[in-house]
Every structure is written in C-alpha cells, then in structure tokens.
Image (cartoon, rainbow, N blue to C red; front, side, top):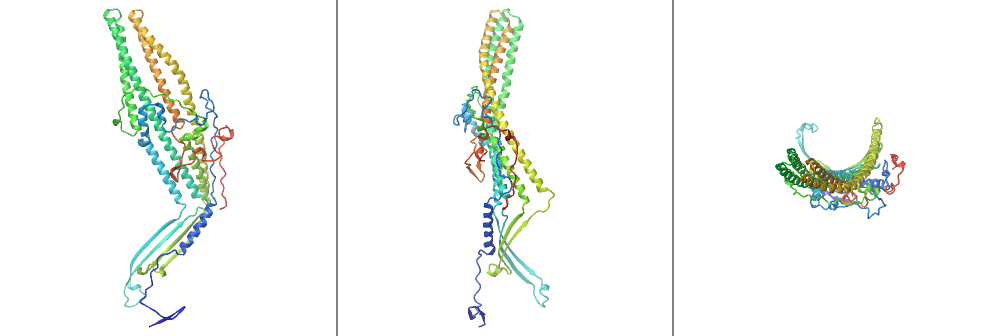
Length: 548
C-alpha cells in the first residue's frame, strides 16, 4: 500500500476508502469581523454624533386671559377643564348621543385620515430599517458543457459537462456616523405624530359638523312647528274675516289680504321641507351612510345650551389637535435640516460575503470550497455646483414656513375662541331682549285681532301685528340656533374631546408619557405665557457638524 509523509504521523497508509466529511457552515472570517465593526459603529453612534440643529419649539406670546370672557377670574386647573371624551352629551340630545360615536368608525373623511396615519407609521418603520444591516442569501447551480476544441487541443478529447454551484450569505450596512438616518427617523416620527393629530382634528371637525347638522335639523323642526301654529292662527283669522265679509261689514280686500297671508305662510312651511331633507341627508353622510338609509323623526325639542368653561388661554396649546399638527410639522421640518446637512459628509458602507463555491457541485459544502470577503467603501462628493447648499437653504426655508404656520395656527386658535366667547356673550343679551319682544308681540297680535272683531281697527293692523309676531318668534328661534352653534364651535375650538396625547410612532399602541406641549422641555405653555416681543423673531439653532 502506498504511503505518504504527514506531520506527526510517519508512514501512515493512505486510506482511499475514507471520504472527507462535509463541513457544516460556520461563522467564517467575514462573519466574525463584521460584528466587530458593527459593535464599534454602534458605540460611535451611541455617542450622539448627529449633524444639524436639535429641535426646540419656538415660543409664542400667549394672553393671560380671554378678552371676551365676562367676569374672568384665574381658573383652577380642575375647574378650567372643558368637556373631554363624549362632549356632545352636554347638549342632552338623544340623536347626538346615538350618532356621534359613529363618526369615529364610519365617517369617510376620518377613515381617510386614519389610513394616512397608518401610512406615516409605516414610513417610520422604513426609516428605522436603515439603521440596521441588510442580510441576504444567494444560491446558484449551473450545468455547463464545454466544447471539445477548448480542451487544450488534446486529440480525441471529449466535450466535458461540468456542474457548479454556490451558496453564499451577504451582509451590507451603512453606519449612521453623521446622524443622517437618525434625523430621517426623527423627521418621519414627527410627521407620523402630525398625521395622528390631523386624524384627531378630522374626527373632531366631523363631529362638530354633525352636531351643527343636528342643531340645524332640530331648529328646522321647531320652525316647522312655529309655522304650523301660525297657519292654524291665520286660518282662524281668515274665518273671522270671512264671517265679517259675509255680513258685509268689511271690504273684500280684507278677505283677500287674509287669504294671501295664509297662502304665503303655507308656502314658507312647505319650503322648510327642503331644508330639513338636506340636513337629514348631511347627517347620513357624516355617519357614513347612504341618505336613503337614514330617516330621522320630527322632533322640535332643541338641545340644551351647555355651560362650557373656557379655561386659561395657555391650555389651548395643549388641547387643540390642529396646533399639535402644526407643531409636529415644525419638528419634522427641523429634522429635515439635519438630513440636508448630512449630505456634506461621506457615505460609508461595509459589506461582507460568506459561503461556498464549487465545481463540480457535489463537493459544494466541503471546507476547501469555503469563500469569504470583507470590504468597506467611502464616497464623498467633491463638487456638486451648490446642490447641497441649496438643499440646506431649502430645508431652512421650509422650517421658517413651518414656524410661521405654527404661530399663525396659534393666533387663529385664539381668534376662534374669542369670536365664540363674544358671540355667546352678545347673543345671550340679544336672547333676553327677544324673549320679552316675543311676549309683547303675541299679546299685541291678539289685541289687534280682538279690536278688529270689535270693529275699532282695520285688518291692516291685524296683519301687521301678526307679521311682527311671526318675525319676532323666528328671530328668537334663530338666536337660539346661533347660541347652540356657537357653543358647539367653542367646544371644537377648545379641542373637543381630544386628550392632547400623541403616541410614540415606534410603538403606536403605547401613549406618550407627556402631551405635545411637554414633549419639548423648556418650551411649555406656562413659560410662554408672558408676552415677549422677542418671541416673534424666527430663528434657527445654528447647525453644527460635531466631530464624530
């Protein structure tokens, strides 16, 4: 038997019957080195190297009290709470109690905003994925026939058929040395929170719209009842005039005037049916139903006018979802500056390959066929014609626009509340006068009819008194309607039932520990309560590029 020399084993026979055992894949050199690079990069990233400005919410001048709130006193936090949760129950209307919860689940505008919010959460996951390596596996098998002429000119050689294959794993990663990816995550997270606040604002807006539609429907039913009673009264008056005309004690024009008055009122009563149908259809759409599927019985009982504590102005920054949307959009725009600044720094990437490659295929997993590679690359732009500086300037301008939008949203919010408060205060005074006017108008119309029957006045006096009564009653009803609408508007302008809490985009099912106003230390509403002329100056933190 033929022998060969081996270290530590002299003259050992070579056993051709023993085959080399296949090697089970294991962590090769690339697999061992890449985790070391990954760990080193993570240590560097943990040091907080992020280019671009950190976000601090700009302050806004907040009034210390509401101008239009009569008898204003400093509100205690507990007493200053506006209705939260099911705020519509304050109106004590069974139709509102039944339909308002449907807005959150069936209204199509709310469903659209919810889908947009889910999309924004998905974008956060996409952005976060760039922080981690990408792993892949590649397998291939090839069967190849080579021509006989290619076999080194050997005479009589035959064409060879060769099976080959490979099984390789690959890893690629771009370490976030400069914080570009983390700024992108910050940007997308703020965008997701803005989308969540937009969802809350859409739900609140649609709920307020439903409350307005129900109020309008109830007032229309009350107006229908009023005109129905007026038609009955005018019919009775026409009967009196008819009797007088039959007796020949009044001119025929009185009969014509009484009949015309009745017919005009009947026409107005019929016209109210159009408005009522439209309000009913609007209610159906707001709860996500076809108009043909919703029929609301006649009910002239008006909702109760709720008492709404307005609270202190500084709490408005924490309560309104549209302010939260504007604030989060501002945070997103600030993070975008960091993304643009990161373009000045080189892109560094690491890659590794680990696996087996063999021809013929039968020995693929033998140790002799093991292959690996490990590499790194860096790319830096030397000249771009000012593209990067333009991107940074555009990002800063976008931030400036977001700041202006935020401050404008806050000012508009204060304006809305002041408008609601002034409207409710003035309408309360008007309602008091109209109540007295209605009592006088009813009494005056009855006296005029009695005097007409006694023959002391002509029918023109009766018509005038009755028209005054109807007009005054409708004016009083209109003021009641406007007071209810302003109350609903005030609830909406104070934030409605929104809790003021946004969720962590990384864990959307977990509520954030703090409200929007407290997410940025040092920028609370209380700190901004005192008006300060310098608060109106828009400025950025200077973007910096700390040495990593």
